[in-house]
Image 1: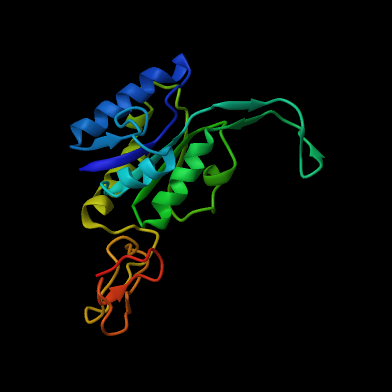
Image 2: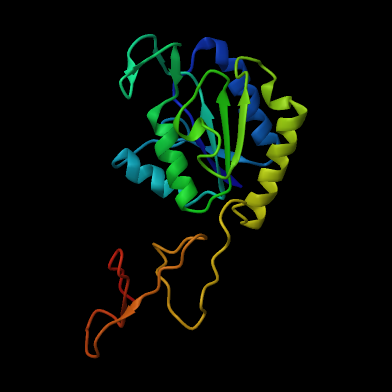
Length: 207
């Protein structure tokens, strides 16, 4: 089972042991992690490559490691009272793509990393704040239970946060744009159109 893993290609040495343990545990579960810049390397624009990889995956995991430390400044004209730790911006892009595709999503972030997808209530998905510096963080009982449940959703195709769409079998759908969350039906073309009988209103796919 292939799973997209959103994570930075670089992490501090303090986090390497825990990341390595987690990736090995996924392998023991029969899961193949796919990450742009790690398991897969781009042959086109990175965002297009991420979308292509996700099309081959049954679920997604977002790992929020500290990447940016802000010690001074303001947010909405209010001065920062405490340091702010952010993950890579790709975490948010890739999480949004996985969410829109209806992939079962598991979000894990270091205790100090915040904002965006790492704030509770942003997405209806499994969200865990853990000490990613611990070499055995993935062996925590509560996290292990969530990981097992998430894997079950990946196998069943149940996104666990978006109700599965009911597709009308009498209408043709676009193979490119239709997801578990939304069906995109093809529009009928005028008679005599030489390239096909149906067209997708979103991507112009012809059938």
